[in-house]
Image (cartoon, rainbow, N blue to C red):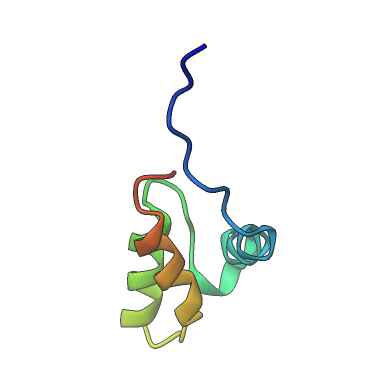
Length: 64
């Protein structure tokens, strides 16, 4: 049986870090923008969002 190529699953610790980022009000609302846009907006506002979040978002950019 043919199987679709699967990406390696993201690290559970990474998913937890992303969840915490999503739920953190200090980085502003997340409605209507991507996580990466929200991260970049937080950076521009001087809120120092976690660097590993941005790295992960860029690495898994094709995985919403």
